Image (cartoon, rainbow, N blue to C red; front, top):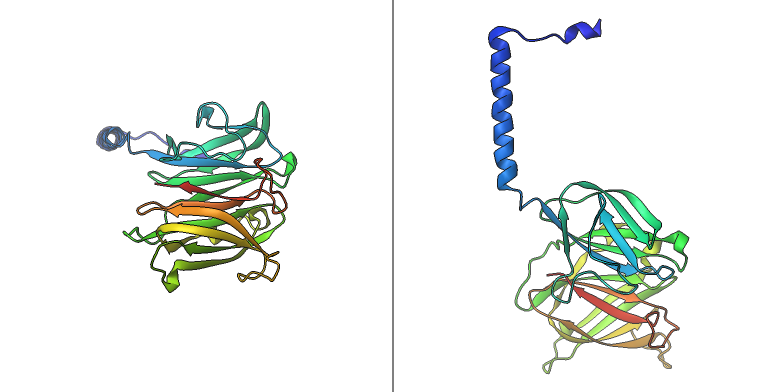
Length: 260
């Protein structure tokens, strides 16, 4: 019978096995203690779910940030968007007041940073999220940094044109990012990569089809200025609706989040 394979160890073998177990336990305990402050992951949450009020986020029952996060905002502050959690597989719960929007297990690696965007298509029942690792492949330099572009304007496909406003203009001071679909149409994290661009102050234009403005400029929209500083990575994304020119949160706008 299978149960016969499980039998107690006797004499020297039992003592030797116990010794190995105690040694492994002591080594594990020392390692665990020495790394207790290193076993952390860093998480940023951005709320771009139009049909949802302020949200709270918890991991294994512990709030990730105090209070709630309103639409259009990112956790943290202008210098650091991240909150800290224990690196492990956690039960992640996202709520609007007491209503559960999203719930499930998520794994966060040690000493890794993540950007999480909560989005929808104007309906609370369509709430979803995308989790992105904030480690670009290229390192930072004095004149070049990494920017990740995303589109959270529902139902659209929009591109960027950035023109560096410095005095001595170079060919590479004009950057064109091909039109990107609303993230909800393709929520695969692998397609949202960082691009390297020159640091500087840019005038930003959004375009619907061609990066050259039509005669009536109907395909071109000036979104103002975007400051890209040295030694900082960025998330840059569209929020709002292309036909909304109001001053409210649903107006079409370009937003940026410095990541380090």
